[in-house]
Amino acid sequence: MPKLNLHLGFWIPYVLFALVFLALLELNKNTLCGWALALLMLGVFAWWRMGADKWYLRLGGFLLLALLLALVLNKTVGPVKLHPAVEGKNGGVTEAVTVSGGQLTGVYTADRAVEVYAGIPYAAPPVGELRWREPQDPEPWEGVRAADSFAPMFMQPQSSVIVSSLSQIIGYHDYKISLSDNYRDANSEDALYLNIWKPAGAQEKLPVLVYVHGGSLQTGQPWYADYRGEGLARKGVVAVNLGYRLGVFGFLATEELQAESPNGTTGNYGLLDQIKALEWVRDNIAAFGGDPENVTLAGESAGSACVSALCTSPLAKGLFRRVIGESSTTTAPKPTHSFRPLDEALETGRQTMERFGATTLSELRALDAETLVAAADVNHHITVDGYALPQTPYEAYQKGEHNEEAMLEGFNALEGVPFILFDNANMKNYESKVRAYFGDYADEVLALYPATNDEEAKAMWIDVYSAIFFTHGHACWTRQAIANGIPAYEYYFSKENGRLGSWHSGEEVYLYGNVPANSRLYDESDRALGELFSDYAVNFCRTGDPNGEGLPRWEQSTDGNQLMELGETIGMREDRFAAIDAILDKMQGAE
Image (cartoon, rainbow, N blue to C red):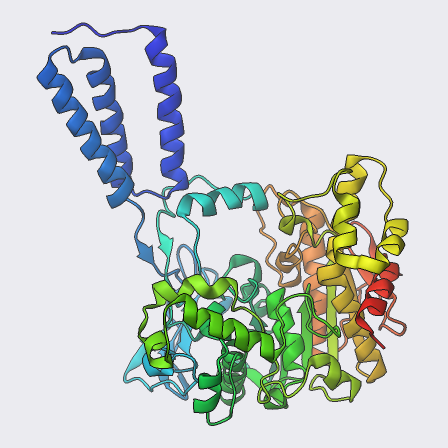
């Protein structure tokens, strides 16, 4: 029997390696089988390194070690699965509901206060010949459909599981070590489904909120915990979240697609999906106790950009009454993201065809989704297609053409932070960053945002970046509302917490009433603000006015410079970005 080598020169590196390796298993969401094989591998490695003194034992140990490592890395990654409509134990199956496609059942939350119906098809799968066509009606089904799991997220670029886990730690500060989440989210081109949350039991004429998720029109899903509809349903709203085509599948534009369309459209398939979902809601939401005449359309980030565009789409007229827009719009004269002119979209489409070596549309449609998804990086913008959008939203508002009767919209204090985490400013590059964007107007910006050290440069650039990509669009939208006599309520979200705080998307968990009851990342002040913000949202959905008994007064915007601050301080305040927004107005020729 060979003697064990107990030298610390082996054990210290070995233990460190073992801890790092096991941490990677957790971040990679490996299954229990993977953990068992990993522990066996570590044991084999210790035996091989310390006790195998014959050449054949060393060779055999090495081969076994290599085999176990290959099995762990390639065969025990968590399987792909669908998310259940209710996490953990649900409260049972609901009664059947009849919609245009057939009958379906949902599930109750554990306390049976909310009914959830997940994965309801609102359009036919946009695959094969239906790829890059206007959305079609879904096929009806026979029997009773079990709507108890969320459909896959739409096809999109995905990071490795380890990278996704690290982003939860670094970006969200919200990672839980668990062996119950060892799976990967489903990802499919067949993803035109919606989810509904409603108060349990028989209901009639409840206000309806339809939510469009963000993700730069490239990524995202309609079932993320921050904006699920359960919080609003508990307060008497029927909440609907929808999936839509993303990236190259949702926003590719080519002349050939334009020619084959009966409506002469191209480049806005994701936007047309959202309109199709709104039509489904109009025709079916009464079956869930919702009022089809009282629909509020909401969205965050790129979802809010879509909402602002739909406010000026003739196809969406009459499908909603009010809008909630969070942290993005397309209403500036020259929107800084999520929008591009048609000629630019068509040129990108030509380049995309060349990228994949396709000379015809048939060849492009023949490519598998996993290949095409790589082109999402350049095909993720709304455009003026002459059908969904006959003109830019800015032009429509200038003519007084819009669909909404009231709006609630706004932005967060530190919108820009997550986008420049690894490219922030310091004294060496701050001025050059400002001059690169503002050109002849740079001196005005530098006078507004002077920096004398690296810390100030970083803070100033966060504000400047936030103004360019987020706050200015909302300033334009508020002014357009005022000019058109649309009641507008604008917010400034400034609450910090242990998670996202007032970064981009940090307000969602509050607005939709989903601040976790037991998370240490939030305290009682966060939960109180969540109650307040969601109360405002519910009131707005009901009447078009967020105010209600016992709530601090939220004044309607009259000059485009007064915002409702929602943070440690709650109350009306002046817009701290007004001066730089005025510079951006001059740059873009805003009236």
